[in-house]
Image (cartoon, rainbow, N blue to C red; front, side, top):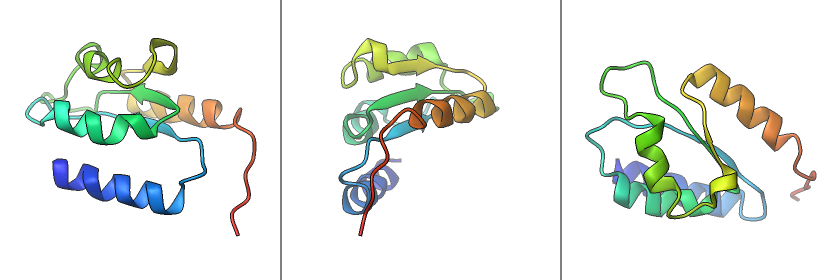
Length: 102
């Protein structure tokens, strides 16, 4: 929901402001994706779109429409299976240079 998206954005900006973020994102069809995507997607360097195992889940192809407004196409990844999406995120994040926070 929008409140959760705002809380996550605030958390990421406070504690990971210098980090490159690989975000895994899935949502239900009844959520306000136009506003949620505007809040969260600009924070991501790479965005992996996935589908929770639920009949109300939005398909990755639908999520892609929102994602491409904020993240270049080459940084959007469609991985319908959640476990595979998490594995993909870990592989992508492993390519980022290490940063140290004091």
